[in-house]
Image (cartoon, rainbow, N blue to C red; front, side, top):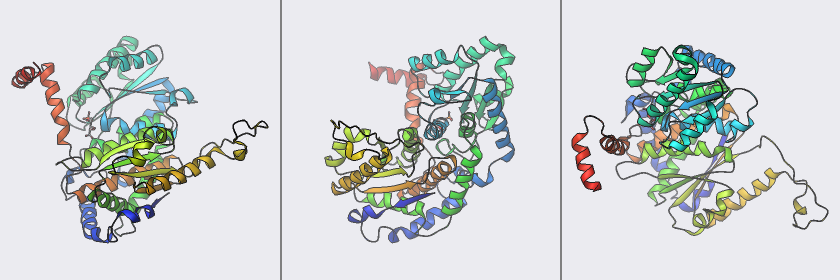
Length: 443
Ligand code: PA5
């Protein structure tokens, strides 16, 4: 389904970059497969494509079918790992303009992924006069951004449909046992889906967290799971030809040689949110204990006209991972122009994808010549099965990478710092002393 090409790393890595990591990779693989390494309680995603709850999966499909029939819009409320995966898949397989181009089913709006009143008002404006449903997603059930947004949309639904009508239009995805959202959903009688205990937010796209919104967008979630299962099968095999081993080892080798920033590049604008999902996955998994590659992303060729200068000649701390889809979904040919004022007739009749391919080849050569190692990931096609495999590939390689780096890839202690300050400054009960201290500092 995809091919990992590391040939452009040769000038940048010592000869034994892979073999010297064989032992550590085998150890990392065992920790992932057996769940006995740091954060092992959160490796439920490793065998998920095979062991997922089939009864719940059927309920997800049924709920999506209902939403597609009775709603012109679905508001998906969540943040971080409870948001990015669904948006990544919907946009990559459809389009960032999905709501304008969709042919059937509801428009999909994302809310609760920030605290902007203007962004929220825009979503309210889009849905208030049409039939809509809400999927509220929060594993902890206590995250401020989605909790606040949910209050607002719950009130809107209740005003529009009454309490009972609203109840039938709210779908809650949360912990099986704990949390404020769980209590609320139980109390109100919403249809509930589970974020499994052993799956952390950023690894949860293939659970109900991602699957319900993705299915509502008309995407074949069985094919998505099937692709992930095929990747799971392949990547669980030990060996230096395992693409996840190779990607993890290459990243670690580059990091050790001073390449501290990884740019995920793609030539498809539809891939933008996949890159956002990938940034959370790698950033939260590796960025701790004052270590970790900084994950960043660029969209080519657009960013070649902005970030291109830095990439070519700025500080030499960057490497690129370029995701290339082999086939365009639509082919557009460049027309002939008898006047040829723009001098482009040498391209007449050629598909745009031919121009993109040559741009890609030229960019790789230029960037490698400029001191930027390039990892190339060629992907067969932009479909659900392939994307499922790609998601699993990046997740598995991320687990391996974290263990190679010597960190727990499944915790995120650093995200609590801002939350505690925010709670204190907002006057949340229990944070009085911190509030006083922070307000003194703020002056
Ligand atoms: O990966 C993570 O754990 C985070 O990004 C969470 O997914 C995010 O903070 C949202 O948390 P919750 O689902 O508990 O609302």
